[in-house]
Image (cartoon, rainbow, N blue to C red; front, side, top):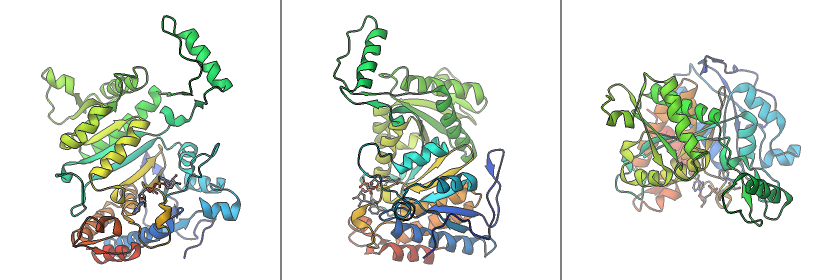
Length: 413
Ligand code: NAI
């Protein structure tokens, strides 16, 4: 069992960045948070698989120096705080971290630790690649047709949490102001609860930039801007317009819009930029998934779409995720703490292991990421799975969390 500490490991080096890119190094120090609930089951398996893949692929020339940081219940018990300032500062300084799920206690005035982490580190982009792994049971006929990356704006929208309870002083004041400003409209009723949905051009442009830089780096064919601008014109509609304007202004030579194509422009060598209303995008995911490669969208849309897309390829067990700032990133399992499975060696570690693959890619070690992805595919194709998949695969052998990790390592090439 590794130690939880605020002191970095003695060996290894801090990751640095030049021109927005991580400078590859052979022995980086990478902080991690085990997480609550099943975190203690899945995170050690992720460390084991990553260490084995790195050792195998780079023949011992590269190594991660892991640093376990306190957060969640462990930190609350030991330091009286679920998210100690030192933990946040360490991630800021070391730039790249990986985490298991954290419990959000239910109750008034308690913020989600995940939201707190995102806000304090300005992690404005939530990135979720969604693709199917052969052998994983899926509810659709052609799960392989869906292969997208969702870029979800992470800081704005209803998630800013600016809300006023019905009948509160704040709600009454906002209602009075709205009635004063919306001349010519019937007044809104005084007993409403109010939530605000702020959007900015700045916030839209930076998520739009993240999406296109990724499309260029990976050679992907299109970006779909997803919005509900037909109804919410100055928030969702503005998101759509700001994103189009930004692409045409800053990436003119790299893009062609669908509208320009209809007017005869060629798409040769260009990234096609198009848009979809959110509800239509849910149809598209099911009916024409192959026509989309990157989705860029606002916070609430992205939340819904990410989970719907993950379900289509077999659920959250193999859905990785990461949150990016300009100069730092946290990679994380996309599911929660699954309290009923905690400590039972049953949970599927796939999500956090694939998130680690995103991390390896980000630090410039794509060969190790690829080796792990291939080994996961072979393991599942050999019918070795955790209970969540075994339920729909009668022929499969059900493995525990750590045995599934062992099987992945055995299949590393
Ligand atoms: P959950 O994701 O923990 O569980 C939903 C369902 O999926 C449950 O049936 C669970 O058993 C199953 N499940 C989840 N992960 C699994 C895995 N790796 N293998 C097999 N089955 C798995 O969501 P829930 O119940 O809504 O939340 C529980 C706690 O987790 C809450 O405190 C919530 O705030 C927190 N949470 C934390 C997240 C994070 O840290 N990023 C994300 C989502 C929830």
